[in-house]
Image 1 (tube, one colour):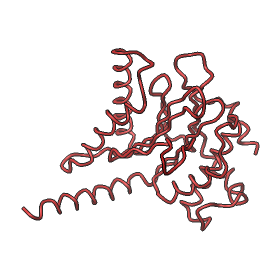
Image 2 (image 1 turned 135 degrees about the horizontal axis):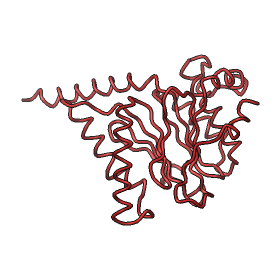
Image 3 (image 1 turned 45 degrees about the vertical axis):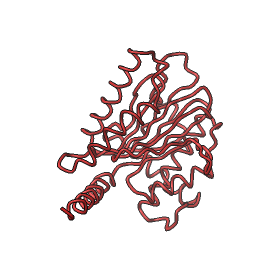
Image 4 (image 1 turned 60 degrees about the horizontal axis):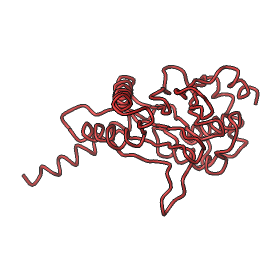
Length: 258
């Protein structure tokens, strides 16, 4: 009997290690506020990583495609039910994440005789101004990290998602120094690409530091672009109820010209 709690903790540790290994190859995602809305950005088009959820809400994810789809449909159904029972204005990302999605992930992760979700997710809810935007990350164990400010830290207008802690840190460091929530969309796209590149350099261990130099980023940028860009925006200026739209080839074209 005394050994049972230890065995459970050991099983959870092994499960966490397994999931982290499975998520490691995932291409990082960047979400950041800009003048026009919330931009979601990643490199690679082997499968879709950015999705519409509800009117003002979008999701990006890395992990197993089947688990991502199950979780995406769960969130869509919850949002649709909430919107039908109450109103579209009552559908809140904070409620969906904290009271619905997080408990589901936590229960699956801690039930060691069942399969966990192999997914890490990034959500955005666009507001009327960049200061009103909500961006949060939901992990496979139900843990939530938000961009909202606290007494100990100021609010951030961005978030990143990757399979490596070092990659995440490198991307966040770059965004802290380069990103402004009032930047126009074309500038936000450039920052997102450079942020993704900075994370890739850290993951490849070719930079040898947490914050690659602008020269290193510029050298690596064009090579990574060959993988294809996936980008979408929650358009804060749209008059439509659904704010999500994928960026057009014309909007992405300036990235190739840099």
